Image (tube, rainbow, N blue to C red; front, side, top):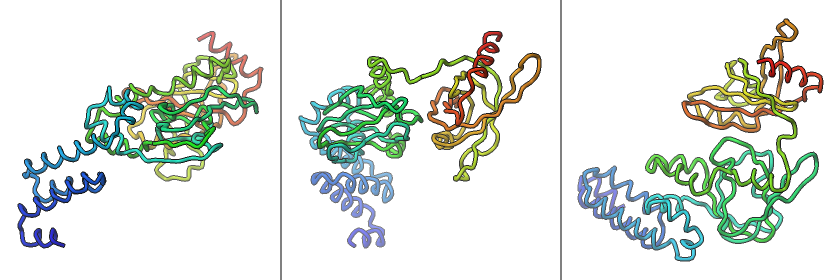
Length: 330
């Protein structure tokens, strides 16, 4: 009420002083969400009150640093070694907390995920299912991260992660990272350097002798078109799009295309696509029409994306042999 009165009376200096006091009070009581909100309000009231803004910001950052206890700093030392003080504060105070009981899934194989998880307490198992057989590929615990393979790219989960005991996790949501990157544009690159991009899961699979690619992939480069079938979101790509086929197997294929809309591409995961292309078989042009579900999308430089599609119906052995012969000729 006092702030509103000051603003109505045009007493901007007194309003700045009051907002600064409120921001500092909240920061020292570890109410950082409100402290940040008051700091932002300073810009709105008087963007030229730089001395007050800098002073408030210093108090907030100092209080955030104190709130990150020595135990937390030791557990997540690799984050603090790479991130600046401001980036570390922005990251750790954007995390949400989650407590789970034993035998609860954190990630589910074949499902999308937009969270990066930090394990603070407890043990979790990583399992992979192939041809109705579930295999334990690793166990993880406090101080480890999970979810990188889907958080930093647009893929579905390669494995299922389940709690073996009561567990406490922190997680960063993709949408939240996109928001704080406006102020810290290098944060995602730093997080990828710290956490990796999920390659460790593929390494664990190889160590267990599990090959996710059940069928040989054949490099076959040709122009194709694809289209989303029966989309339930009007903003999803619906028109026919030209792409370049990269490889093909008995049960799937991958192709490249360009797009200026990362969000539309992200929404392709889990969608059913219709794919059409032409092959020269015995001197005749044969039209190939396929349908499949998008299991992953990987971003590349220059607005290019690779899409990995699992076919609704596998090729016959004879058909895949023919494709293999054509690829060898090319």
